[in-house]
Length: 147
Figure 1 (tube, rainbow, N blue to C red):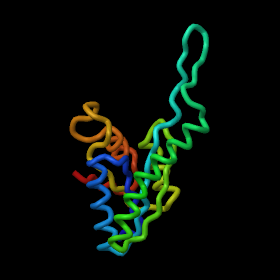
Figure 2 (cartoon, rainbow, N blue to C red):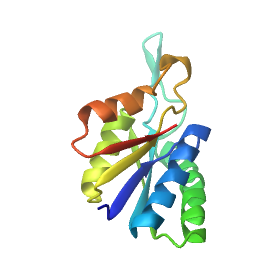
Figure 3 (cartoon, rainbow, N blue to C red):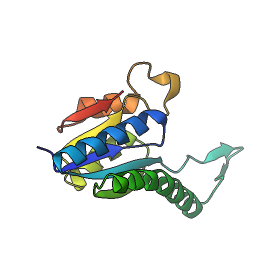
Figure 4 (cartoon, rainbow, N blue to C red):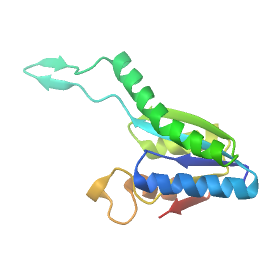
C-alpha cells in the first residue's frame, strides 16, 4: 500500500495530529515517514526614502530557519523512533509552502501526503488551512487530512 509517507508539519497542534496519524499509519503498514517542514522564505527587504533595509542577513536568516526546522523535525523523529518507525527529516525555505510540500513528496518518492487540517494560518482559512487546500487541489498523490 504505502511505503513512504510525507508528513508536513509546522509544529502547530493541528500538524501534531497529522504527525501522530502518519506515524501510526506507517507503523501499521510497515512504511517509513519523511517529516517535512516548509520554513518561511527570507523576508522582503524594507524600503524607506529610497534606501533598502534588510533586517537580517540572508546567511543569518538561513541559520535561524534551519534551527527552527530542526526543533520541529527532531520532535517528529523522536516520536517515530519511539514507535519503531524509520523517519527521514527534510526542510526547505519557501514563499509557497504548498509548493515545497509537493516538491518534497516528489523528490523523496513519497506515495501519500499527510497534513493537518489547519496550520498557523489563523483566520485566513476557517475550515481547512489554506496550504492544505492548495495541496489537496494540486497533488497527484493521495492526501490524508488529519483533523
